[in-house]
Image 1 (spheres, helix red, strand yellow):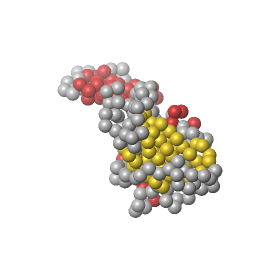
Image 2 (cartoon, rainbow, N blue to C red):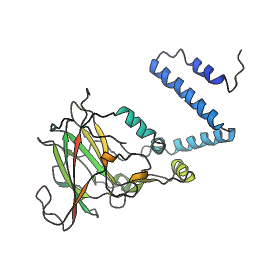
Image 3 (cartoon, rainbow, N blue to C red):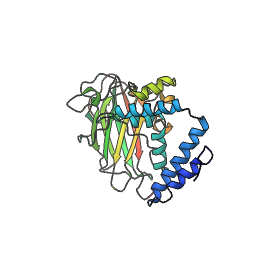
Image 4 (spheres, rainbow, N blue to C red):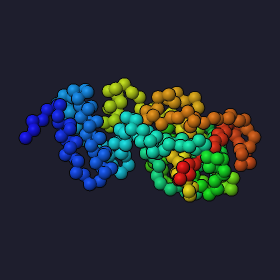
Length: 287
């Protein structure tokens, strides 16, 4: 009979999982044990700290419901969500980089024609977004489904406001040139939900909860990996310190300030507006 201590316990726990019939599950669980034990040894975790950690995770679970997932939020602020995303979406040259889906994607959106105004009467600086979808080599992809959604001028999504009709979200289908476009407003930066355990963690560690302003894109086409990404608004003060580590340099958009005239769809433009043009490359499934 073994007498377990800090020097031999880890190896014995790893060995207890040796008969796991699923090779991947065995690999994951044994690695989890090794790394978790190494963490406890490194910081010399006290019993009071371990009880506090269990209480924190319990409160995190209690905060979850059908409208909020506090564990995903915890994963986000620890950078784990973005690390998993990076490992699972290594992109070839010409393909757009990915980032996190976020909590406000509500599933398939209503198909909307090119040039539609998805902002309705929302206040804010007017913006026309024109995008193209192509292969990494630049061949246009027709018929791609482009879901977009973003916050309003005060940093709120329609899902947070409880509006009956969709606002600042829609689906577009690319034309023969791989093109889509829509009218909207420039979104605002906003805080992630910070009224729960994750917010308490940020406060205790002197971290802010802010995300820089961005537009979400989810682009799907047969024969290609579905792309989940953002375009970030240039000049936002939170670009360098996004609370969920989602910013990548290639995803910071370029805005072109315009005065009057017409939008790219030919409709009359206001006295002052912004134009955002961006090309998205999709990774083939066999890449």
